[in-house]
Image (tube, rainbow, N blue to C red; front, side, top):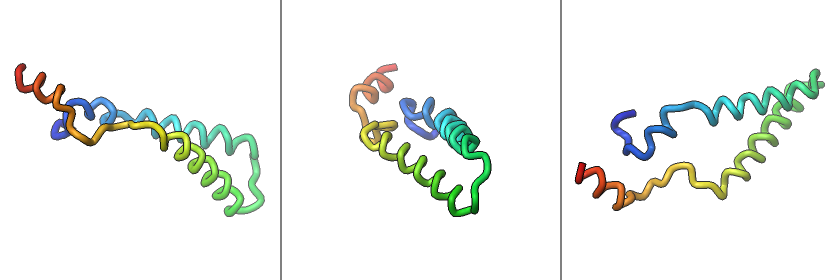
Length: 77
């Protein structure tokens, strides 16, 4: 983790997003209680994950291009 740029460390060291996604899947599948077959469960989970993916398409979680302002600040320190 320490090999990553400092700006990425906080987001990459936690699993908060993954844990939150798992909680949401659990909440939504508990409403159904009993699935008629495995395919129906897979369809629901897939739809929920695609919905989440669509929501995140407009967000930037990590900026992969280098920020020159951060570099010069780090070099000066």
